[in-house]
Length: 219
Ligand code: SAH
Image (cartoon, rainbow, N blue to C red; front, side):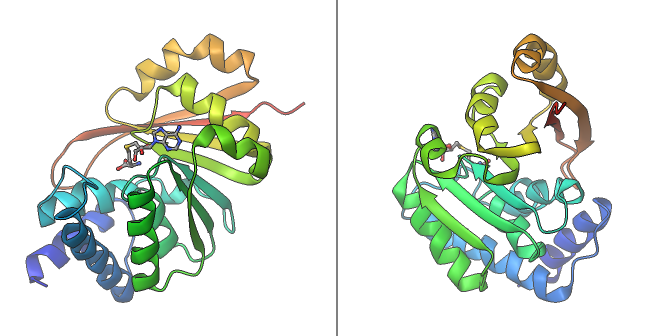
């Protein structure tokens, strides 16, 4: 692995306020290589360069790390090639991570990646979000998604899966604040309050990102 890619990852994590243990950085780069290998055969991501994957998948996934409570049961809805769930499970072994996607080949990749990385706090399920309520109602402290659905669609799926007082995080491009504003009435009707809309720029690329953090309004 070239020094500059390792530096991109380490420096980028530093910009996000994290110091990556060398073993975690090694495994994140292994994930990047496995993603590229599998992506030649099955369509997992449109981002194919090493730098692109490091910035737009690995570092982007890690932007939410500080929002996740110790030991949280985390659900990633519509996780695709495993983002943000696999990098989060990797750097936070305290989390119990469940990943859901409707597409079997993507779940196959995620299981392969999790095995290769030695993740034992991660499971990937091939299921549609709307059928999860039967089996997993009230099971998660945090439900997250990136690039999945409109805010109201995501929230409608996520809310029944949360424990009382749980957190929903929608990872968005630059549109988080606008989407949160547009969905204000819907969120209120569903007993949710927007705790914060975090805006940031990705390391190296400077691309704008935002995430909407919502909490069930208990009592
Ligand atoms: N979170 C990933 C993938 C985003 S693409 C990333 O940011 O890179 C959206 C993913 O949601 C696709 O992989 C698609 O298969 C999945 N998906 C769409 N509707 C779904 C549903 N109802 N239930 C589960 N997965 C769904």
